[in-house]
Image (cartoon, rainbow, N blue to C red; front, side, top):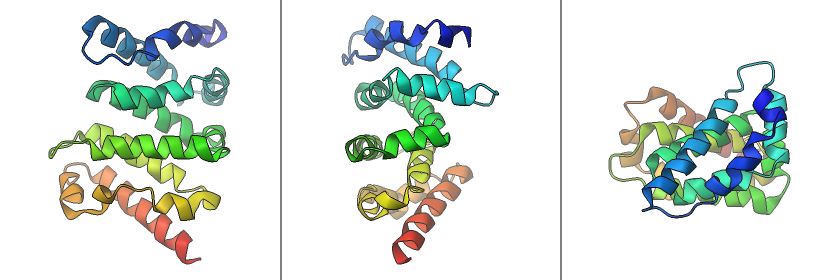
Length: 186
């Protein structure tokens, strides 16, 4: 909490804004900055809600999305982890769904991550991405548009088969599709 009170993430913003993918020192700074925030984002402690509130108020959330768009696999994993931790909190979900543009920017970024996965995808990254989609599927007023934003690849058998080594992701994906279809039929 001392780092939060010191507003440490404000000093990390410039490193998260790096879009270079081939400048190793800059990429390392970006990943290290995400690591610091990722350590803060372990919301299993009693200060979790305060940390989410701080991260959302610091306007750093769009930078996590940018890191998912421009980062390598490790950067994407840490960014997706932070995002799923934020949306797992009620305030984070409200923040992401309060504004249509913000909601769909996040959904499109998650879709790009899925679409860019190689034939043998990163299971850790997909677990966090599916977790984000699952949590966002709990927003009833966005459901009709949201169901059309799920990447087609996520419904393909070879994608689902690639997840077989991670039963938790398979369960979350099944729950996501149940949420989409049950809310659509209501």
